Amino acid sequence: MDHMQYKRILTVAALLVLFAGVAWADDAAAEAATDSGAGVASQAVQDVSADEAAQETPSRRSGGHSKQAFFEKYDVNGDGKVSEAEFMAERQVGYIRRDANADGAIHSEEYVSEYEVRLLKDLEDQRKRQIDQAEFRFNVLDKDEDGILSEDEFHASGTRMFTSLDTNGDGLVDEADGADSY
Image (tube, rainbow, N blue to C red):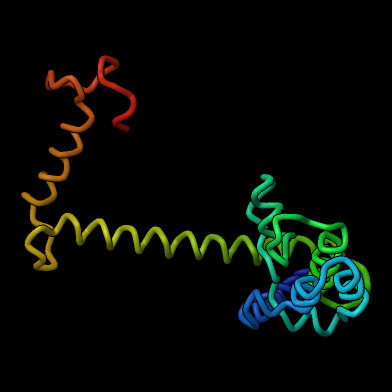
C-alpha cells in the first residue's frame, strides 16, 4: 500500500468517526447563527476552530441543488431567509469539516473522501429504506400473516397489479391503457 492509499484510508476512517459523532443540530455555527442572525453568524465563522469542526458531524446535509435544498441547508434559524452571514457560516463549517488534517487547506483526497463518506451514508440510508419497504410489502402480501408468502398470495398481488394497469379491461396492457396507472 502506497502513502497516498494509506492517507486516504486514514482520512476516510477519520471522517467515518466524524459522521458517527454528534447529531446535526449540535453544530456550533448553526447554533450561533440561530441566536440572532447576521452578527452572531459572522462571529461563528471566526469562532469555529478546526478542532470543533473535526469533532462534529455536518449540521445540515445537502439535498441537491434545488431552491428547497438550499434553504434546508443554509436557513439555519428557520426564518425562511438566508442571510449572507448564515450562508458563509455554514460554508466555513463545511470547509473545516473537509480539512481532515487541519492544515488550513483542502487537498484532493480530503475533498473526495468527504464526499465518499457522505455518499456511503446516503447509500446506506437508501438501502435501509428499501429493505424496510420490502419488509412492509411482504407483510401486505402475506394476507394470512403466517410469515410465509404462498404462491396464491404472490399471484394475487400480480393479478391486482395487472388489473390496475389494464384500464380498459380488454385483458391486455398496451398503449390503449391509461398511463396514470403506472
